[in-house]
Image (cartoon, rainbow, N blue to C red; front, side, top):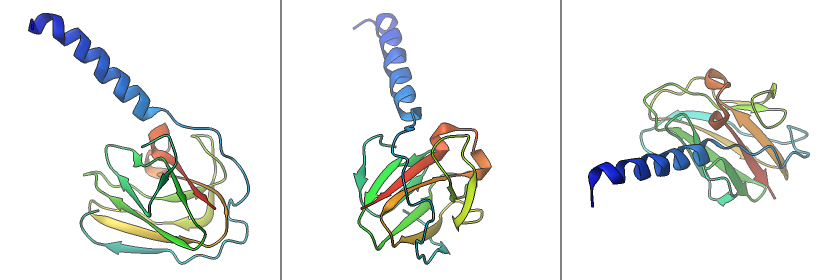
Length: 149
């Protein structure tokens, strides 16, 4: 295959992947924005460790200026752990809705997480919980949602 012919196709494919990764979801608003949810947040320093469709699991990676997965679905009573796998500092702070225009709430806030740091929060009540990295709140990929069933 001629490299000159293949490069434009590769560039288009890469742009499509980047565009899809940066897409956010403005749907899924509902109750649960801190209403009566008992919690036990904790930040820890431990090394290690966005899909648009809901994912099951209990961990969220912060990498490449994005939360992955961007939508996480868990049962009530689940502890979710975010780990900063990025070389840049981030945080995890609850908001009153999805998207870059949302205001922060006091439901949970990790404080600044350096590379390798983790933060955990237990979602006791069903609902939709949006959150962001306040350091990079102008980036749609730095907003995400936990759906608690």
